[in-house]
Amino acid sequence: MPTFRAPRGTRDLLPAERAAFRRLETIATDLTERYGYREIETPLLEQTAVFERGVGAVTDVVEKELFLLAPRTEEAESWALRPEPTAGIVRAYIQHGMQTLPQPVKLTMTGPMFRYDRPQAGRYRQFWQFDVEAIGDAGPAIDAEIIELALRFYGEAGLKRVEVHLNSIGDAACRPAYIEELTAYFRGHVEELPQLERDRLERNVLRLLDSKDPAMAALNAAAPRITDRLCGPCAEHFAAVKTHLDALGIAHVAEPGLVRGLDYYTRTAFEFYAPGREGQQQALGGGGRYDGLVELLGGRPTPGIGFGVGLDRVVLALAAEDVATPPETRPLAVVVGADPAATADRLRIATELRAAGLPVRAELTVRKLGKQLESAARDHAHFAVILGDELAGGQVQLRDLEAGSQQLVPLVDLARKLAAAAKSHRHGVGEG
Ligand code: AMP
Image 1 (cartoon, rainbow, N blue to C red):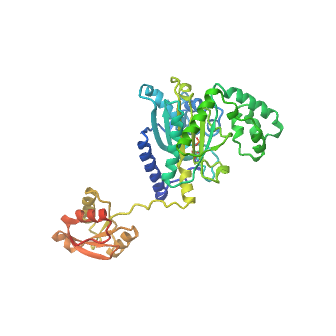
Image 2: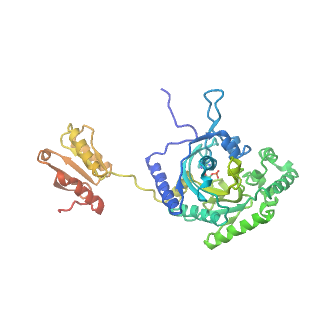
Image 3: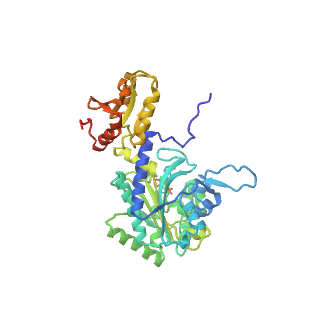
């Protein structure tokens, strides 16, 4: 038999880690509800063109990292697993005529994304994002609101010291001239460029700015800055975003090299970092404004802004900061029995307790009572419901595994007693 393993760059979220994800999902759900976002779920796959157009054909995400699905027939259209959520959500916004709804349309989604990236710590081929999109508001106030929402998410998750890196990357009015100027600048230094950056120079020059190659540091520091070249409206927008952040008491780090990897961004661009980890390409999340995207995908010109939080990285950061993860769920009670073979009784009584809403496990393995009780203790159950001769008279033994006490309880009272104990978090069963 071959030994099967999860595909490279993907991993199983085992129960303890899944519980940490679940906790983050709950925080995300509560928070987005509070801020007026509604949940959407788009397919894990889209027509490849959605990403080619929406993300940009000359981006790493599309050029190198797209998971393409092998077509079943020659004429089948090309599909790809989603590398990011925004393009699909905007596709859905257009497809379902959401521009006729009151604007902005505020949508949130949490789920797996797929990028054929080189796997390393904190970089996976399947990873999870908590995503928020506000479509139909040109800002600048909502830009600040969405940044504050992301910071609140990190804070509630337990990461108190997350930094905002902020930039504006202009729009169709000012960026083309800037790109020309930047291209000319780097052409003048082409001999100093590492090979990868030389290849990118004529195709996506902005990417050179966020190159992590140390050879690029000095060149980038001296490069012309987009924030000095913004057109009037973009400069005004950027200043107003900062005023709104100031009003919320949110500090930010100006980051002129922050251009984000995807073509669709305009104006506001931001990323979130745990202090000290900036250099490792380990953003905890990022986002920005995409005022051209709806039109690019075939809708009416509509502004939008959003962010994606990398949940895998948040879980890693929480572990690095020793933030306690939730305990695994444990049963309130385990139903065990003196007669190893009487599995039907144990199953029946556990079923009744579950029907009453109680988290109860039935011991269904045929083994001695001692072994059954051991497994109940290993599960950290509060109680063992022990079925014995008394069952004929409608009674069971209720043992408090933590207090070590035990009492005879009529079956008709069992659910009520367990519910009361669960509610009061008492470790003993009272006499009443
Ligand atoms: P991006 O759109 O590339 O900025 O991605 C948004 C966020 O998703 C990033 O800030 C990371 O937290 C997370 N992320 C992106 N790519 C990966 C990956 N390959 N593995 C894990 N997390 C990722």
